[in-house]
Image 1 (cartoon, helix red, strand yellow):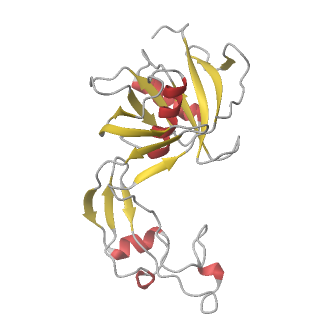
Image 2 (cartoon, rainbow, N blue to C red):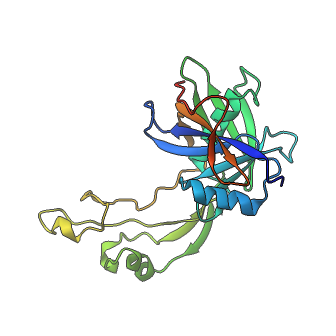
Length: 237
């Protein structure tokens, strides 16, 4: 990679209709020439939940190849990064205006995108099929949250994978009148049957609405953020 080359990136909020809310995502619309190890370092420096690097596709039926990184590792698939990147590619005319369906290539395979046109377009994706993994012992699952095995429902904890392996199990939480709220793991309410991680059905599309973006550049040699043509700005859809 040329050390003097800079790579433009944009930040888009997903799951919100208000600027500076929702789930932020960094997208490099053209990451051609970046090595995977540098992608990981950049994702670690930006320190958002995910950073996406768009590359030329290897499949003729796809618009772009996406590499999705958390600060610690690469993901084969993730929902909000996929739709947030689709929004950027549409905005930059990498997808023909008026297109309602297209594919994005990810490590897990092609991901279908559907666009609902209008004043505030909405983007949908179809999650990859879930792959069933190992059954996990209830004692192990309970230990992850410092719980007793009896606090788990009688549903076998299991690893499920749609590009990002997830351990799915359910809790039986006592009513507040029976157990003190302080007995609950941090971040959990006192509702009954709380899914620790919810995993989408392979036939259930995600509706996600990125609504603002900021443009910046990152210098490959100095690792500094520099304004693009104009200072970073927010654009409502």
